[in-house]
Image (tube, rainbow, N blue to C red; front, side, top):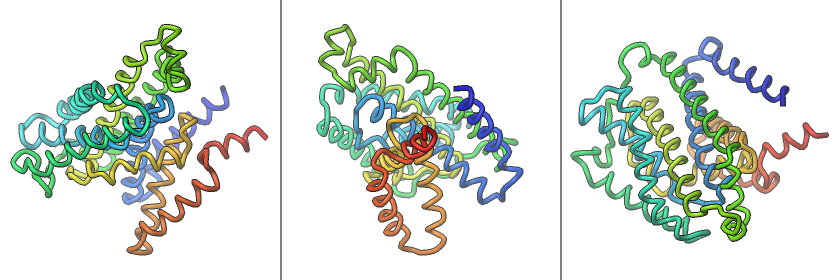
Length: 303
């Protein structure tokens, strides 16, 4: 345990020093990796720990991003207050959606979340005066030193580390243990007094809060938000990142997010058909490592 803590601290120090060690391009790539890691870990709260596969998970990411943009660009609220409010807006939407979705399980749960996502996508595209329609909303900026690339980097770093630590404590808490218990056997969980419906509802609210935080950070990083972030294809991204890294390990989605973003960054520089090659490579990785990359690393450490 001490070795893992030491390794984690060393990694955090290296990441914190990256703006001094790499070019501006790679600074923004690392920012994207950190945001994607937060997004993927929040998704894994539902899939890995709660046993809930949400096909429409991108709705929470998109709501967080649009809440930030609407509050700042349309309503004139300051960037930081808008960013603080955005995850709570996403959590409120998550609570409402969860009220209906927790009544279902398996593929039916996933399809209902997908239906809500497509509804949100239609609203964002059609509400041109509020959301900018197909063009999205632009002008999402942070004034002052936090608006510089280095300032943004450290802001994202601090928020992501804080959120990841909070989620780690959640999954290690009695709530997290009960969430995993209902994932493994909801009938037995009910028998021992676990409120399965509340556990599932609360997990969706918590996950949507952190996904909304990731969406808000992405809005700052891109200085814009777009309806494509809520498109049906967008929900495949956290699923791929989580499965790549391994959903049975807290750090798995973090590793998966790094692999996904790096592959995308490198391949787009070589070919316009990067999606084809990336898809084939991801399929190969998943076939060879069905439990994720972290499972392989864990086996090597145990040898």
